Amino acid sequence: MWLNIFQWNCNGLFAHLNEFKQHLARNPYDVICLQETFLKPGKNFTLPGFAVIRKDRENSRKGGLVTLIKDSLNFTEINIQSAIECISVKIKTDTSYITVVNVYISPDQTLDVVELSKLFAAGTIIVGDLNSKNRLWGSP
Image 1 (tube, rainbow, N blue to C red):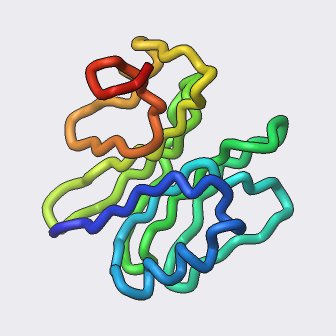
Image 2 (cartoon, helix red, strand yellow; image 1 turned 120 degrees about the vertical axis):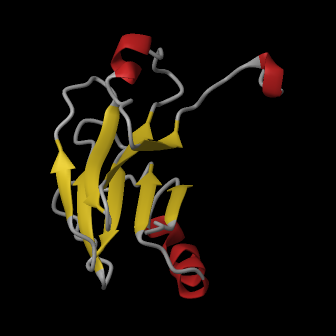
């Protein structure tokens, strides 16, 4: 079983909703991982055919994550005790399980290797906006 996974830092989901819907109309996905959604509790968001898992930031106007899982997939949300903003889901495949972790690390956050290592395990795919800066790839 192959999973088509889409990862996108949307920089405001509702501000770019038309762009998002146009992309989805041309590209089928099983799992969609969005970062910097800027959603707040009480602001409804649904996508037909998908279960929605959200992690909203209540104390900041930016940030926030959404993971969308196709309705036909059997999954469980995994609660990871980490200071890193993330959503983790364990998806049943034909023969085993795959864990997908949706991550957002803001540019003003110092990356903690111990916290990041909590996300890694066998059969895990980590996607997201890690705001990794290094001169090796042109960052000042």
